[in-house]
Image (cartoon, rainbow, N blue to C red; front, side, top):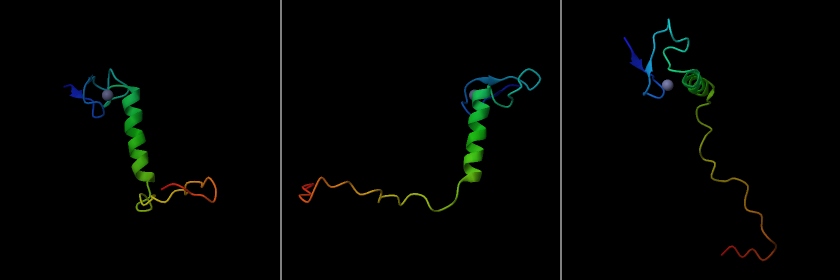
Length: 67
Ligand SMILES: [Zn+2]
């Protein structure tokens, strides 16, 4: 029974006996999956977005002719 890789959904993943990265097709996909998992677990809810006000543009002088 061969299943597609859950990450790239392309390559057929060999069984674990022949593929140390199962259920992923490759080390790369396994790393990606791990990265996603960690990213979610470490993500702090809220306190994201609402970053509209970054550092205000540096004025080039008292003239401030941005308009
Ligand atoms: Zn893959």
